[in-house]
Image 1 (cartoon, rainbow, N blue to C red):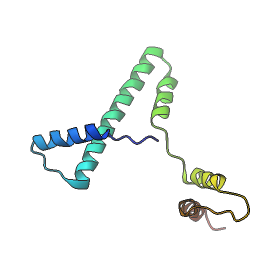
Image 2 (image 1 turned 180 degrees about the vertical axis):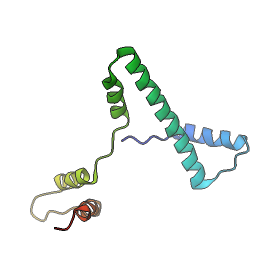
Image 3 (image 1 turned 180 degrees about the horizontal axis):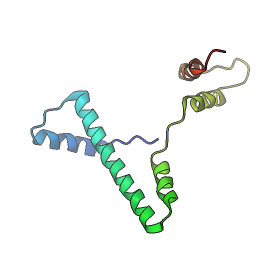
Length: 114
């Protein structure tokens, strides 16, 4: 999924506008609020577009397809583990990165003991 954060120029402009209004939010909290406000606006616009597409065409699938394309679900832990295994080298002396090992370990830990 693409990261829904404003480009740096817009991010700095939004923070400057908050400061001009007397809003004193600094550091991680300020970044969190600016990014989430931007994301919420983008999500609201996407929903409005989906509603409009559905109202024009009377086919709910177009809005659903648009939503799925613009806000894809991240892969499940199982899918990530399988991708890590597929991406890993399978030749002699094969190895996985520490990140791939962590993903596979997390997926295995979710399996029930039999």
